Length: 382
Image (cartoon, rainbow, N blue to C red; front, side, top):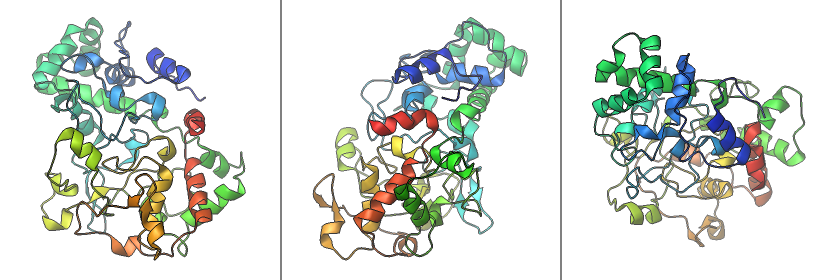
């Protein structure tokens, strides 16, 4: 396991024991002397939630590739609230570009599934104030919790200037900067998966994995890389496997999740981003997620509707197959449900390729498993 210099005792214990980080509080026993160390302590601090029961690490668990394995959506600090979207992995999130328009004039980037947090700092400031997540009343309440801790009371002025915790806006902004600095550290983006080691000539892929790699980057047999490749070369060592654009791929509603949270209105995706002026054109679109660590960060899609990675590929394949039997969701035994938002579906991208037989579907799954960071490879065996 590659261990970065800033790896906390709480984080190391969680990884070594294979346990979740929920409930681990990493309030420093020593005053953090760097932005990254302060951000690490804040990331694990449950005192920054209303009932002092939830930290960033609760829903972005370092033992599970900084994602939440507990279900389609994470329960809130109050013990009963539950959101409507799946907590994405925070690994490689530092590579997401700021929200805006790319050279082609298309919306891209930003954090959260709808890109509404323009930067990593903006994202870090969201959960503490979300009533169905960490549930704090306002920024002043969060900064008051920071002042309670002697180590924070000393560290913040040293790193941000005297009086920073006397101003709720300045203190809150400083907190988000520290958390973002931690998330930009090497523990979140080690680039040490089997695929990375293959690119460096350190290992060989199996025949099945190599077939999956060829299919993934193929313009003839699949078009996976049309949305999951940013770099120009398929061999780029810093490929994060996302184009960071927004697409509607026709994901069905997660009725089980909706039964738990009571939400009845459609999730309109990008349309919920206050920075987007377009109306109907933005409905149902979500930012393409990274595929790094995808094999160990189930459940899948923005609403966690699929539990298994193979099901995801079968769902994509349902757009191209003529066989009704191949349009069955193996997790339910019924056909894949209708799209939650039927407009703006990216039919050109979804239908640009032949239907795949089981051998090629299994090969794609095998390749996607090679994108797992080395420390999480034991999870592939579970």
